[in-house]
Length: 361
Length: 132
Image 1: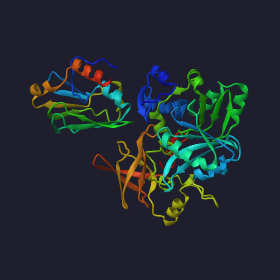
Image 2: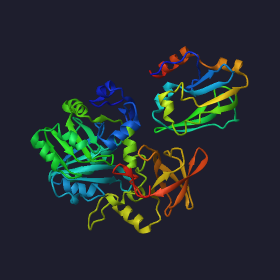
Image 3: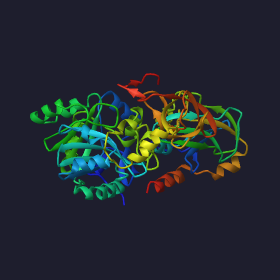
Image 4: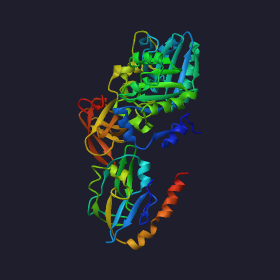
């Protein structure tokens, strides 16, 4: 069965090309994926991300539960509204999903997980929550619109009542606030500033239309993918899954091996870290013409690796990718594109920062 | 969608072929195909002098989304390629049946092989049925 967000008809009326995305009928573009990409990098664009799963966690022991569930430390969140990016691991240290968790009150945390992993995430969270007496509630009644770009915040401010506007203008990055019936988080998946706004379904179409009237360009999931890749952000299912640990997906920065915290998967992560020699994820740039794609073979001196996320970068005008390769791979590698070995450079990412090529890219 | 010019023949895989007055055949991909692919970012052309067989892959078009082979509608020799495309692949998005042509073939047995191709009405019917 195909799910539809409340904005489905709105997308169609805007001429969107719709595709199946993890069981959801979603807009891939509204005409030009590259045009939408540039709109976000240069001005402001918006994405319907209502397919993502919002889960509320209630209970006196919620923080204690999240200490156990997440590889990142929930104790970094000390102020209400603060957000944290983390992996949720299985017992083998493999990534079940990546997520954002918001601290609201000691007995109320909000988690946003991926759409394609909804069922297994809810099952896993529900199973783990029982021991902590935490109530898990999926908020299917909520929609979500991401407004991103250098001018995104200003365009959102114009639609808010003065009191909410003041609150939204004050929050720093990775912090959320509430007002006008909206949950407004200064987060995103594009590398640009902006907000992800969680809105009751009944208000979502009107919010979308008001944003459009304010000059925010509708952007599809195609542009979202090239934007997040340029920004160096992982995509679950492509860059990591349950067979991959955070060390192997360049997500070590999200793992906190703090004293005495027994999170799921910790033992395996500690052992792999101590042993070393595991595969690593690197950023690649191809200066030749062509496009790096998921699944292509990468040839290194230490053995073969493979392209994870790969695409054309509209900002750089050439192809960029993530690849998982044997430890110690650096310098120039080769990608196997339809049987032809093409040189690719290992670079530090983000590939794009502040709308321009990152250093060394 | 752009209207389909009446002088074209099509493959089911969305290539078009136009028989020119001098007997050569110009080849491109249909407006429908460019729409499916989205913004094109790369075109790999055949070489002039290549011998191609009807139905064989002889060029590649890549969009942000996917790479797609372009098949030769007819057997023959490649006598021209659109040198402007590698620098401006978006030309195919903008004008699939005109400036977005990809290569020209001097066909070996035009009369026989062109019978295998679809006329504009049959092609329109095909893409109509694919949309549902």
